[in-house]
Length: 376
Image (cartoon, rainbow, N blue to C red):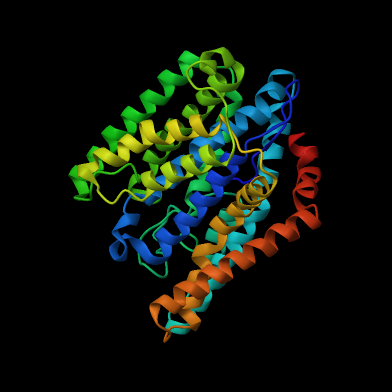
């Protein structure tokens, strides 16, 4: 869920999608709430994990806008991968380090021993976006996860894979994008049904984060990523397609209206035997992005807040779970709600500092220069 909906494609006008920036920021905050308080305590969060599928749709839209024309105009695959890796890697590295520190602190507080070699190898791999895929539990939950010290990083892995595949996806016509997205959705649904039958877990598209359903993460991300690409192609490259069907809306009312629709989708409290989350992934998320891309608030303070929320969403996503583990470790005797409030403040404050640090030190630019001799 790389941040920053700041787009400039070669031979295309500069355009900002502030509503989509806001989508990203709000979705990140909802994911944080989902992990901190859980649907067990607040049932309206039951389907909030679908925010990740919104991130995947947004990524397809954003990357298509930012890189399609440049790749078609001669940008090398190596240069493209370099830029994508440099955009994600610094924040992911900080998230991995936060996760390692939080895990060690937790183990120390509980008196558990750590296999130093295994621990180091797992986290070195994570710095390169390589999942664990080993018998290595999340320290706080005991659940097997791809990134056990910082579970949410699993979606960054799949997002990076999708962004690499964009080199080939960008050659696809709109009909092929539609067919590809639908085919991946069908595979995701069949795979989720199989997981339900073999494990007894609820039927859900919320797969990919653990080794037992790791492979289903690929159709999950490609379903939404290809949909995001298709949305951009229809709304921006074929403006006549939507001129009469969905004209551009201006002002705060439509912006707040679409945010309300987003919250209604993510806070829908009923599972409906799996029907609702699959409906949200296949229809509601793409529909929200399509409508959101056609809204121009044109209010300076609103645009600034939306832009900043979009920027801070990525570091917030990457560090919020380790921060919560640290708070629970060192404030173990504090009431649960106090732990949540402290974690929210600490995670957001740390995210602001991380964003400022990365921007002021030009970390992404330095990573790009470092990798240029290898990737171009």
